[in-house]
Length: 399
Image (cartoon, rainbow, N blue to C red; front, top):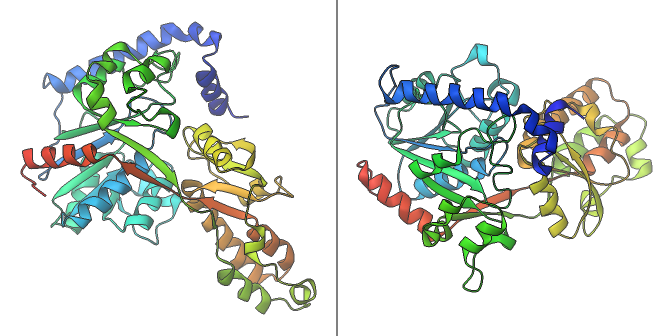
């Protein structure tokens, strides 16, 4: 188990020894506050883009559902005729080569896994760079007709001025012990929520109803009291991640003809080409691989689908290798869409190597047939879209 995974699990169970790190949290709070004040007071200069900027982020470490939310917003705004662009830090990519435009041909090792996923799903113009100003300038140079820029996970990047802020809060995860890093998993104090539009990412068991108001749920989940002040607003501005049907990492028609063509010994013919649909998990035991910020959400979703899950959590943005799969035998292997971005590249590399050295075709075919992806889609409440429409109108972008 990596150090990152160990600390993440300690945060989840609120381990007592984390309080030994409290002095470091105090130092972190001081540095963060001074940095924020330096931009608010004008001691350091902010960059303001020539078009409105919507920042989507969170105040916690780990996944909260930002990427599916961004994809849902891009799809919605495109359907309304608004020209949208997205920027990101490009974590996990080649920072020395940035700023870079993200294309459908971009690799996770170049631009990061989340940007690859966003572009693959939405075809939105996108640029990555740790320096958000450079990312925006690169994006607008290539796409000068963009009317709105969505900044992925730039909430704490105060060098970038923003017109709208959306903070995603995972209602089922809450805020743990409500302490800043490293004692807790907060990047900023909970009071930061007062200054932004808060989108509550809820799971079906946390969705409010007439019989179970959202304020009551917040109390059960140990959320702060003042987050319950406007329970109607908290109830209205919600999102859920809805899973789609499991899909193969690579469709059989993409690789079986290639392997069969190189099957000089006739092994595939003699053994029979495995029908991928027969390997689809259905109320079965599966290996669940997750390299996202909060893997427990993924594991829980699989269990809710009726699967028996063998958990394999990895650090967020983990640099997977093909050999990582070799230890998971017998059962199907299910991964997130974000991790699938990397594994597709690795699978295609394996296929190319197999074409050059046609050995072990049957083993590769059998492994590819066991690799499955669970796509999810963000579903936003009507009030989220109504709020967005009002905010865009306020910055001169009526839909």
